[in-house]
Image (tube, rainbow, N blue to C red; front, side, top):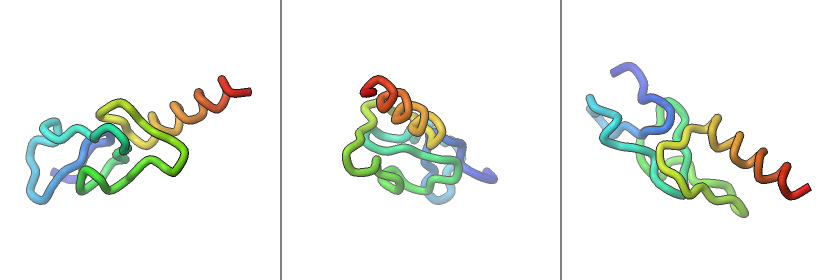
Length: 68
């Protein structure tokens, strides 16, 4: 496998990234190597699995817009 897809993490020698969805409280851009590599920043939280960095950014922007 060249690079782990966004929304998943790939431990060493993983051949099936869909077995490793990004966990709640974290986001996983392409190439994420372990489940807790990218924690949500302080003051934010992700309650979904398989979230990529782009999806996380969109969620935060949406929440911020609702607060205006």
